[in-house]
Image (cartoon, rainbow, N blue to C red; front, top):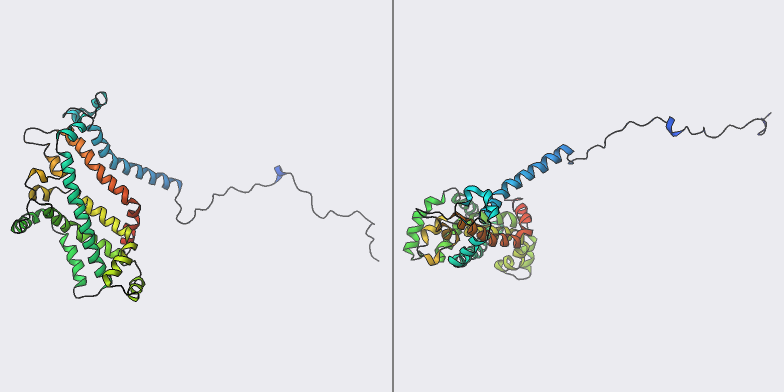
Length: 310
């Protein structure tokens, strides 16, 4: 005999929920750190290091700018007193009473000439080594590297004799040529590594379209290598802009002085005009900073790509 469905009380399908207060709480567990994720202490240490490095890099520039506001040439000895008498008189003196603008023109001629010629020569050499196999192509790059091992001071005398024999002393071309000896080897290595990252199929497509090797290089490869070219241009420009040793020997007349040589005229045997030197140093940095601003969006890409292969 089966039990009737109504013969007894029915059991509830589920047991009643216990109050929330009576539920056992789960132990709190910290979120596992993902791979590559820094801990809080690591982030604090990293940002602290970056702040310290930024301070070390920016402090000399800020100090130079502060000293340039002191009207007296001895204000750098007590910089705290500059706040009460700060002025732009040093900048007015440099711009109106010296040949600063003439020095800027000479430096721009030398720097832009070195930049244009150096980037073209180094790019041509790097492309040839990257794409072509000719006798001595490996030795060419090692020769570029070996030339960087010698101090440039020991090259002054032989270069002076060579330039004197070619009647190039006291000319812009002399300074551009000797600056290229510093800039081209480094830029050739940099651009060679960058050209190695560009697919060879692009060169083959250029040949199919009837382009010459130089046409392929000029019309197809160079536009793709703009980040690397920007790094090379920035390096060659700064190399010539701040060069002092060669310019002090190969430039003989005052009308050919570049900015580093003009800056040195504020220091003589019996007098040092540190306030004018500081103001001139700040003014010299402005064109270099402007050039950096123009190419900065390509610099990181060009440096990292150029380091991928070499």
